[in-house]
Image (cartoon, rainbow over the protein chains, first blue to last red):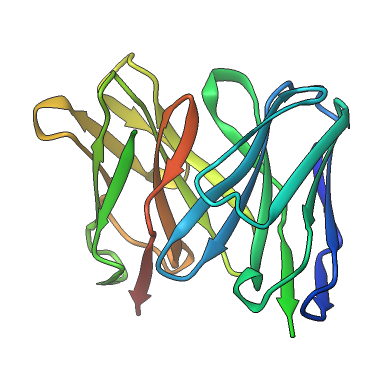
Length: 111
Length: 110
């Protein structure tokens, strides 16, 4: 989507390794979010940020950490990847009128 | 905390038929409500949103939704389904952060 990009788009990693996913925005929005999408669960919030170095946990934050050192970048780290973290990860930014704009997603497979 | 429930994980309609996707919400304060659509291997796109103005909200691609406070519902409708409407649809509620329903996969039969 225009203004928000995620990298990588696909990744396969081994159990126990750290993994970092990147979300980059060009819109200068304050709020950024990380969700995971799993069949039957919709999207569940992992962490969110409301400014540089200001982050908070969502409903499924265990095993994940985030960092935001610049307005445009929001990083999601899986400290020690497990098979239960195989998922599609979406980053979102909150724009005008409370709507979110989503990135194209990162498909992560932990083997 | 706020939440949404989407009734029916799969809905199948014939091309030209009415589309009705159901969503009920729970919130202790007046919520903002949203419908998003997701096509295969893509992110979510905003269809429409309710932010306490008109209760009947019109969105893109001929979709609309009506906010009914008494029923705590925000059902999505389209009068005539098109093959291109086949996708997964998510209802979401926002009071602070946004919470999503589990999704409804819409199939359109020719």
